[in-house]
Image (tube, rainbow, N blue to C red; front, side, top):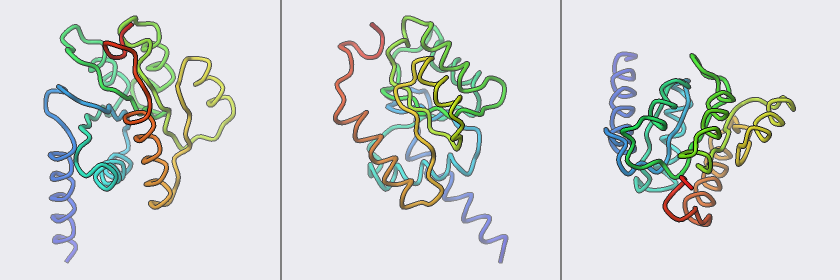
Length: 168
């Protein structure tokens, strides 16, 4: 029985990633920087419910990968939004944010910190380094769905980005 559940979970995860992500990063609207597979799966599931597969997502599992995806000379188009976790392997979220704000191409790229931290110094440092928002990740799915929906609606629908994308 548990083998059937494992196979079904793997199938669903693969299906979600095929639907919600792009292979080459072209036309990606959101870069999700998250190392916890459970939170990645939860976020992809929520995005499917919110956007009905219309939002293209790419995933970076650590800070170094995120910077490579965003600062590479071969990047043709930046995502419209980065959702960044604070605690990441290889390079933490605050250092990723610091490097994004130090680079002219990503200086104005919207970055939402989505994390489980409620530590006041994490919040203060995120804003000091240029985060556009700091959101504590809700622990139940209905609330997470609402919060993520608010984030997506604001940054991808309501907000006007600088002409020519994030680079100014």
